[in-house]
Length: 327
Image (cartoon, rainbow, N blue to C red; front, side, top):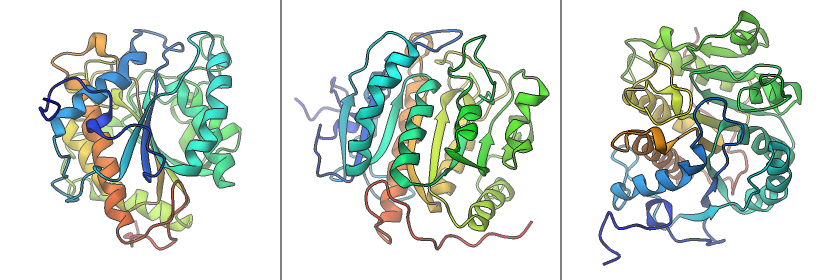
């Protein structure tokens, strides 16, 4: 009976649980205490796992590989459901051992989880990271409705704390209401922003090539720093991802996002999170299915790259990267 595709199972793609020998691992951070509109992202990890069971053997049609045999699901990390500070204090000591053993994918949870993750990666790698940030919102506010930190401040905090090289910060899909200081913060610090408006009508890899090429060229110019991808599912238009806490019309399509995720397979990625999936507001599992596909695509892309270069769990890959067209 366990071979049937849609029976309930506790792990992503029914991967083995808690196997310290696997080079890739997933872990859930089931926290949504910093949500400012619709709660429910604490249920995101379970929904993403359930949706992933539709992937069957998981062989990717572009990368022709599967996470099976290479990845493990560590379950949800034990965390208090109290204050943001309490959650982060409990989370921090759990991260370093995982980064030592595995190339990690994190299932959120709201976007406040990304700051402690970047703090752990910065300590683990000993250098600031590059970040590709998919989101409807800039997350660069200096406070969170009067609170010093939350799911809308992590980009500002990460740059202020030196966790991220601001020149290597890339934001895609932004479109929410925001004052200029917040909206343009990353660009003012030397990073790149591609608003959803600028991406309208660009869906295929060929159409997106100017964007992909410019991002690739930036990473090449900076020596291919270790790259972290933070995927807020609300970067997608609510037509593709209604199950999220702060939906914003006018977003990316699933095809756009997949084109970008596939193209970034050549970059020096060291980890990823997928956040803000809120199942209580989902319809027909559209959001959790999209999230599972993006996580699966990331894992298969990393496996494909690892077949030609094996830097070790969580470590930066080789300096050599894809040639970029000058623009």
